[in-house]
Each structure stands twice: as C-alpha cells, then as structure tokens.
Length: 272
Length: 152
Image (cartoon, rainbow over all chains, first blue to last red; front, top):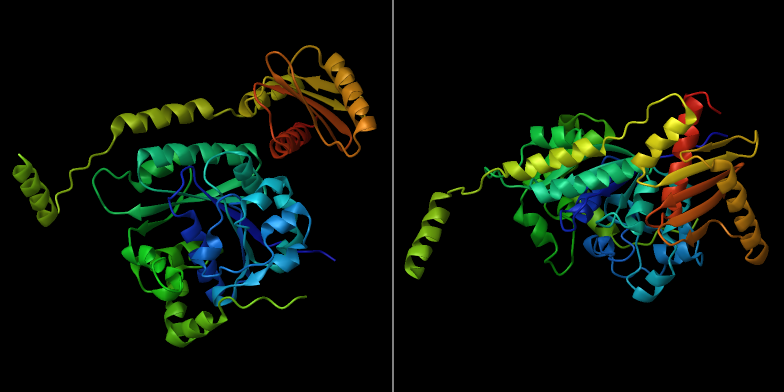
C-alpha cells in the first residue's frame, strides 16, 4: 500500500511579532473551509500561543508530552475551528525543559498521510527549536513585514531552511500600510529570490480578534475584513486554486456555516 | 516649541502626510549579504564538492567514510586518519553508553562531531556545535550530491 503524505509546510520568519501564528491559524481555517483536511502544529515549543489564538485554552495532552515520549501523537490532536485539527504545545516551562525537538519531524510524518495540509507554526530566530521546525517540513512559507530589518532576518531563515534541505516556496508580506518607506514586492522578490504569495494589509480587526471574551481568529469572527480576504487569497495560492474561485464559494457558505464552525470550536476529536 | 510640535503632528495626521522613505543603504547591505551567501555546489571531484558543502554549511571540515566500499572523502587532507580515530572514539563511547547517536568533542579551538549514519561515518569540525538536525541535513545533502555526480 502506498501512503500519500499531505503537504507539510512550516510558516517561519526571522523576527518575532510579524504575524506567523495569526497566519497559520487563519490559513488553516481558510483551507479547512474549502474542505481540505488540515492539521495545525504549534511548533513554537517555548512560547506557544497558537492554542490561545484558536480560543482553546484547555489541552490536557500537548506536543510536549508527545516529544517527551509520554503520549502518542493521536492523543494530542484536537478539533478546532472549521473542522481543522490542531496539536497544541504545552505552556509549562518544566515540560519544555524535557522536550526533544529533534523528534518533531518523525512525529509530524507519523500523521502526514491523514491530512492534505500540515501547517507548522515555527518560533522566531534560527536557534535549535527553529531548525527542528524547519527540518520537519518539506516546504517553508516565509512571512515578513515590509521593512529592511525584517527582510534581512527572513533572508537568514531562508538560507538556514535551504541548508536543512527544506524548500522555501514563497513569502507573505504582512502589515502593509502603503507608506513610501515600505519595501515593494518587486524588491522583496529580488532580494529573497522567492515569489510574493500575498500582501496582508494592516487591519485593526486582526488585533481586535485577540481582545474578545472568547478569542476567535479573524477568519471566523470577521471573514470579510481586508486581512481575512488577503489571507484567503494566500490560502488559494498555497492550495493551487484560483483566488476568485476560492472567494466566490466562500461567499456562498455565508453566515450559517460560520455559526456551525463556531459551535464546533474546542470539541475534542474522538479517539481513534 | 511643544505647541509647534503638536501642530505639526496634528497637521500630518489630518493631511495623512507620509514622512517615511525607502532605506536605500540598508537594502544595499542586504544585497551584499545575499551575494556572499550563495555557495553553489559545483565541481567534479569529491574533495571539491565537500569543500563547497563545507562553505555552504559553515563548517571547518567534512570527512565521510563509506563502509560499503571503504572509500574516504575529505575536505581536508587527512581523512583516513580522522575517520579511523573517530570510529574508535564512537565505538568506545557506545560500549559505555548504549544508544549513543552522535559524539561531540571540544578541542582547544573547535568542536568535532562524530556521527555514524546508516553505512557511513561522518567527521564534521566546526567553530560551534551542530545539532542532530543540522548534521543529518548535511549528510543527506552529501549523499544526494554524490548520487547526482555519480560518486556513489
């Protein structure tokens, strides 16, 4: 029997705070809304917060337990918004100290045949934990903001990921505000020798999504806001679907499916 | 003065004046870094290939000993001796500490990583330690380059 593995993509940047976690969460939801089987993995072992962004605080079994070898990967999978699956990372500093991040690749590959897309949220920088997240994937989607320090750092991440045998596929430019001093797509493409997958405009709705009683990714809370639309276009590009098809069908889904997705949130995936 | 500053900021806000400009010097610096990082793997001879990979992976030397055919490739001149000594060290450590994966040693000026992998043995020297992930990626690339160049 031949197992077809899903695409394993790590979202990485050089700097912290450029929107990796937000992109992973919303990209995952956008793909899941298109009926792709999606698994998100919080590979930011030390500073995990993807679970907080997905509105899932209580996760008794985490990636830490799996990497320590105390739990199976199946037990650490939870169901998230729009029916996507999610492996949270632990918040405890104690368990972080015991984790062997070099096992990440084998953990991810163990479940890769069950999904169309596995998206890993990498930590910032180029230290050991980052390298494990980069090496665990076949493809790397880089994210930067349109300023020179951020681009200089993402360039380093690109070089390191190539050194580790992964293929950078493209770059996402976040927090575009249209100011004169921002570095243009053409220059970014020339410098990084990669295609720009999309620009996400600075959008206060993304920030407001964290400031709710029940935190919800913007793709669920405000799917028609400019940043959400931009991220859906990026999802279309990642999936190899034409953007207008991706967006048109989205409109048909409308309010009801989003409401259903909201109710699904936090529900644990049934054990296999 | 403070009033003037306030009025300037207020006017800029109301008129949406964009006072930013493209940091040309910083972009030139990034271009320089980029140009320096392009270590393409070229060359016909194994030693030449390993020297290219050494530059790409920022290590001081790479030695590969293939047990299946007994061939030793090295970016430095004394590959056979390095491999022999390295194997002895790993065997000694393995006898005392079961399931040893990689042995890392610190000498006066550099780190030496000894890694048996499948039917090969690698000796990598660098100014800082490499993680298992990095060493495996290096080994994988050597194998793949050698295969392409029909050196396997």
